[in-house]
Length: 305
Image 1 (tube, rainbow, N blue to C red):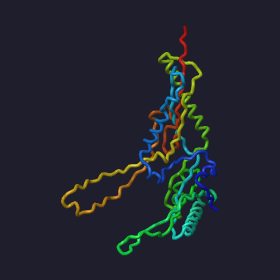
Image 2 (image 1 turned 120 degrees about the vertical axis):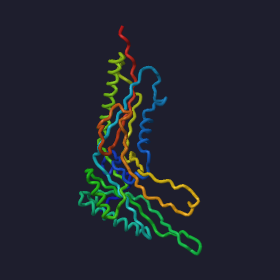
Image 3 (image 1 turned 60 degrees about the horizontal axis):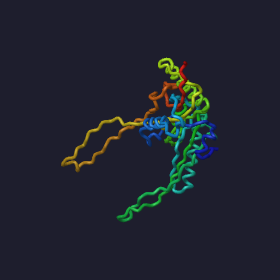
Image 4 (image 1 turned 90 degrees about the vertical axis):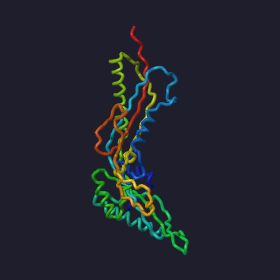
């Protein structure tokens, strides 16, 4: 029996720590300038407002900005199922049959029917125009039911097989693939350890090269973190050059029919620019990018007599 649950409860049911998207999927059609938005968000994290400053303006600030490229522990593929029918009941029956077909196709891949979670998304009326004399009258012609089926798995290489299995069940819309990181405590520790090492390295350089020493312990002024999911970091472009059709005396005689141009989607994650340290810097596949910005205040140590 296929499990049905609202999307908000999906992660709790799958007992996964944090979900992001590893594969852009068709959701990439709805966004642009993904990397620019992520960079803008990171810049905002490093902006220190007046309220973030301590009452005293004395002392020196030392900052650390670090990033972790974290591979996934698990994945959740989301497929969209859309069914049309003359009545809502027929839509529901058709959707049920499609989802059962999906479960049957996924079974040989090690995905049990009980692992699937179905999100009831929307039900809409369908209208069409009917010619009545010289009037086009819009009339109700049926209904459409949209549901999303979430499929959890652990092996990244399983996705192409899942997509082919879904196609055999006449489901062709892969919405996204969620990228799940389970041990968030370890992630936080890695980021803080890296930021701490950056700060200590800066202090050592100041003392060695500039002769400046500071008192311990420091005061934490700002600690901000962020998570950038790959589904938010897919950009696109269309590689093509076209001729320009200029207007002229005979221009109105012709209809210009453009050729279909293919859109390329690519993962465009954050790079090392602006970071003091990057953990796992070599990225060969989309990953979750965790960042931490740390700002500490130190008081200058009194000079020896």
